[in-house]
Image 1: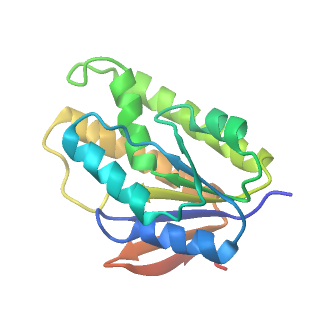
Image 2: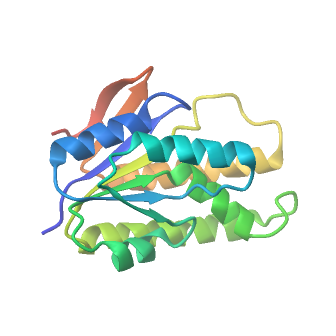
Length: 185
């Protein structure tokens, strides 16, 4: 039987990841942490290390910058809770896979991200675990002044809407405070 699917949205440094970890501990059971970030520079490497230190040592971690649904299905093992942190970087990774960011085809990016989200949704439906998905809310700021920024915002916004529609519970984080938007524990 499928567990609950929880989506946590919020701005940068709003407490999304910490709240996801708290929810996973409340749900209980073995946790699979799925990280989409890649250490492409020293600053990002340090951020990833900081995140690793903040997680309980008993949690398994899988690094999956792309094909997250497939990777979760392959790696689920005995996990009863899956944290996917984060959809924000997954969208960025998809854009990076589509060629030169300045010349990238918007339709191709949209299509590839939609495939990622559908594969993730199918995984959530078939895997017997609770899922906690983390993503940035990117639609509350100014309109980006460049094509790539607008493409990113539009694609991630669409992915967030799709997953929010499918999720049992949605939280919006503001200054470390979770506000329930849909459903609830």
